[in-house]
Amino acid sequence: MNKLSYFQLFSSASSTHAPDVVEESNRIFATHARKHALELDPSIVELQKYVEQPQNEFLRIYISNMLDEANQKSPINIKTPADFFQQLDNALHSYPKYDAQFIAALPFYAVLQPFMANKYGYFLFTNEQVRPYFSRILSVYHQKLAGTESLAYLNDSYGNWLSAEARQYLSLDESVYDPKLPHGGFSSWNDFFTRPFKDINKSRPIAANHTGKDIISPVDGQVWKISKQVQQKAAFAIKGEQYYLTDLLDEAKDSDLLTPFIDGLAVQVVLMPFNYHRWHAPVAGRIKDVKTVPGLFFAAPTPDQDYAASFPFLSHVNTRTIVFIEPQDERVGDIALIFVGLTEVSSCQATVKKGDTVKLGDEIGHFAFGGSTCCMLFEKAKISQLYITDNANLSDGGASPAGGKVSNIVQVRQTIASAL
Image (tube, rainbow, N blue to C red; front, side, top):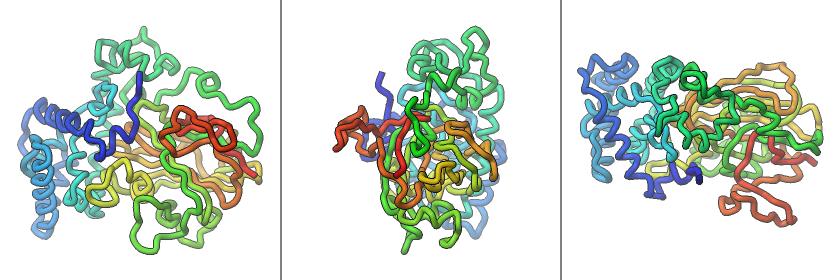
């Protein structure tokens, strides 16, 4: 069974799934009862009241024009600002449904994607005054996904998350899961989403010939971009294709945490909702620092740019947790891991703290619900070889110039690089 890639799902250049997104948005709108404005969730009422303040006329214009532009492309049920706030509430009360294409599993993406792709939506979602309101909305959503009501689709009937099809698609039998218990033994949707492997050494083994200078992948996913000579800072505005350390790491240009990575190497991996969403230490070493940076949630670098093409940009501006590691083997050099939330994900949770010592492959944190991305930074002139590629045509393991095999699909604890 072929699994949908992030490019296929998130790229507006590929129109294959655009009608499916509109159809799912309309389904969500049609299956929820209309509420009075003050009956909406308090987090949405707060946003609505903020937008309605007299001094925020520009936000009201953004929303009205955003709706008009989206409906000119593909008519949807969201025609008015009142519809928009109602639909946000609908998404907030929608639980992820099993869908091999994963559109029905991402209600906020289905609702907001038509607006993320136009210039007025861009102005709205990149507005710093609006960001805290979306943060609260998603915080409420994550609380709901941690409650028992989120178990609605966690059963083995046809078309649900524990059905025979889904079990095969998700390789569910490798995970901690008991088909004899109600809801597979899971206490909530997030409990299901962050499920561990029954035996990680069997499902994601570390190579037997691993040496101290080898580096393993901290996550499952698809290699999206490999960038050499990472820049210290942006000369002007951040562009979607480059990495800038001051913004990416939220550090001053002369920070001791930042300077090792100037002109270094960046590798970005993106995760789909079907991927394993726990993080593991790529090397043995000491945690130099851990911090979470609040950021945006539904932004793109420019209006009309493919969301899929914007992952480097999103790594600079979205909510993210950054883990700095000093490897035990000095040949490797410093490593920074930036775990970035996308769309529904705004919960990036480290389980290590500054000063902790980690062994190779130890669990160090996890994402809560949704798709997400991890950007790895390596110290300048420390890496001798990568066994991965950002060439999608080699995703099944094409030949490298040296005759070895490279892949743009990685699994956690797989060897992806070696130091000099």
